[in-house]
Image (tube, rainbow, N blue to C red; front, side):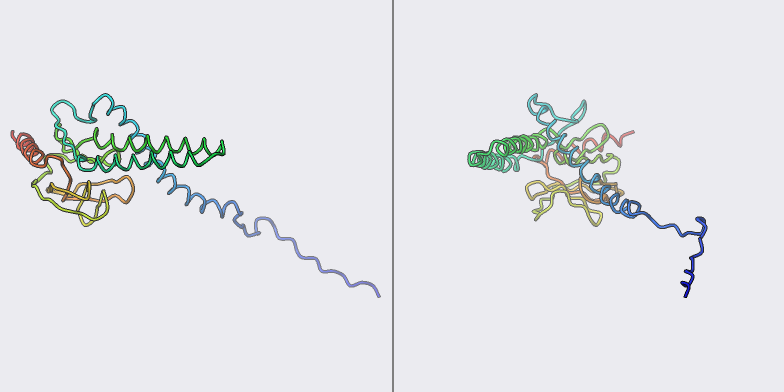
Length: 237
């Protein structure tokens, strides 16, 4: 009995073959979706650390960033510096103890590099808070927090300023409900009211707007007096 013929499947023209996404095409959006937010996180953090390290140079030569001719700088980290120095001491002690306990040469070298970087970065953070003050001048109120936050407010938008002491729990740069709080040592002591909201961009976190700003100044009375004087001068014809 002859074998039954095998039915051949009809050939389908290439133009009629449905296209399918390749594995690479399927994976690429997912990879790109992870890469973009990661780069968006790494870049500002790296820039912040570089500014902090650059502040060490300003500290050594006793210069303050952004305080030019006609500008007046106001510190805000006096109460926080002692705590930061204590933290630096603990980092040094812990690092020395770890280096003493680690005997494997490769791991010892890695730990030494990390320890030196941690100490240098902590010194940079302390220096950034000391060399990057709030500045009033040049038609702007410049509000800062170390190397991580810098906001310029035009003086014509300042509707009022007053001394208002508050204690806060948690958070350094807090933004929400049209309120910006730049908290130092869990405190703010000056409130600035604006005639209209201003855009605020933080190192980490979503941007937003604020028309009420609370800050910390080492000399709040002098800060309020100088800001009031420069606002009055700016509004004179």
